[in-house]
Amino acid sequence: MNLLVTLNANYLLPLKVMLKSLFLNNENQHFTVYLMHSELTDAQLADLDRYVSAHGHQLAVVDIPGDYFRDAPILMHYTKEMYYRLLAFRFLPEDLERILYLDPDTLVINPISELYHLDLDGYLYAAAYHDLLTVKEINRLRLKPYPIDEYYNSGVLLMNLDLQRKLIDEQAIFEFVEKNRNRLILPDQDILNALYGKRIKTLDEKLYNYDARYYRLYKLLSNGLWDMDYVLRNTVIIHFCGKRKPWKKDYSGKFHSLYKHYERMVN
Amino acid sequence: MNLLVTLNANYLLPLKVMLKSLFLNNENQHFTVYLMHSELTDAQLADLDRYVSAHGHQLAVVDIPGDYFRDAPILMHYTKEMYYRLLAFRFLPEDLERILYLDPDTLVINPISELYHLDLDGYLYAAAYHDLLTVKEINRLRLKPYPIDEYYNSGVLLMNLDLQRKLIDEQAIFEFVEKNRNRLILPDQDILNALYGKRIKTLDEKLYNYDARYYRLYKLLSNGLWDMDYVLRNTVIIHFCGKRKPWKKDYSGKFHSLYKHYERMVN
Image (tube, rainbow over all chains, first blue to last red):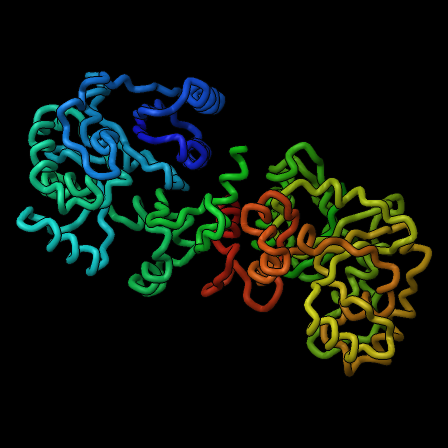
């Protein structure tokens, strides 16, 4: 299976934790981990390569031509890395048909193959949206007049690379950014939703993009079905959304001990 | 290493979870699990035997002569099983020098060998007490005039069987129960503390009998040192004390997700 990650040095440890959870809970699978980055040192890359190899998998550093984003608009404190996820299809091997992008602030706690082999016919992506009315409404108003029915989260993104090569045009993306630069908050996620929202197949967030902050809400809204037992047995990907992260001091949350369990196995 | 467990049918699943955590986090050790019980069926015993064997360890069912507790006083809703832990030395093989008793409502999340090989010279037991002023004071008053400096928790009990065979007298225990039958709340723990408290070596509760309810308190009292990271890396035994148990519906707590992680691996 092909996995895509994009990251900077601050996320090296979380990336290892995410990969550890993925490997442990998918023991009969082989993964090629494609890495897009712009600032990791050779030593960091070598360390990551050893780590992935030691688990029996393969790291592939994606080559991004230095001048590719020369004319791309950038926003405030964002770097050109904000385009990596959306334009990955340009830099990945041409024979790759699909790839699963995962944020490094996730844990994979169950087998991933059903997600990976999902039928994507006609869709550019599969993703989940977090079904909270306030979030949806705010983003719908913010990105008007772009047609936002749901505001998809781009932290777990199954990609149909074949179709992306046919339908996605980086110039349209750059123009969109230029035109809307004053109202983009999470640029890559905003672009994804505004330009490609209609071509995204919806995933069940509780299975594939479980927001770790909303345990009580998910449980309540499901009349108690999604209790801790059910989550551990059914959820595939837990996403530690938001500013507070479980590898930082003073984090607190329902999945804190589980996260630390995996983290402890890394170093 | 020798492990002692005593249980009834309600605790079969938790026992398996505890053993799973013990085996996984002590991979280079071999365990003989001595079981004292009075009501498990042959099918349940066979199932438990298969489970322990499948992990490469050994189950040994302890034979307790049917009339041994004929004259022992019993209390309200307690059965004669309340004596099993205290008098285990009578029924275990005579060449066994030490054994570690563990409650089934525990998880073993780190290597146990340092605890197991602790110097017990002159001590009957090693145990931890939960250092909360209120608990200590209440029990000191309740068990007056018995000398209670600390009220030890009997859920994790390293036993010096050699010395127990020399110093512990079941008649003294039965007499104590007869005489104090109206004020014993947790009989075996009360007996342990009132009669043998001075012969117990104190264990660090945060390492060996970490009360899962007191995460915040432990962290606060240690000026933040015992955060989740530190617990996962250092605590050996987490004890799910109290009425609410993590395998029951509607449990909630800091180690809920970690418990469910181990539980999921059992069935």
